[in-house]
Amino acid sequence: MNNVQRFREQQLMAKAELARRAGVSESTIDRIEAGKDCRLETKRKVLFALGLSVQDSPKVFGRRRNGNGHRSAR
Image 1 (cartoon, helix red, strand yellow):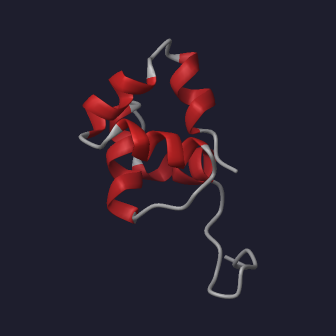
Image 2: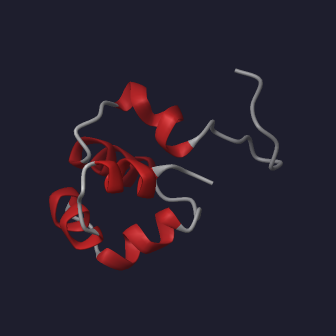
């Protein structure tokens, strides 16, 4: 699960506004907030649209998982 919805709501931002700022569809935001994975470029766009940096990614999206579904040891 990720915290995109929590960060968005803390800023009193509608889902449509986040989608517009990030340059992605509202259905993409729906999928991300539902915990589905997305491309790294989409994560970057969402982070910047929330006023965050790439370094904030683990706080927003959680730790990256390796190919077998387990969290990486990094």
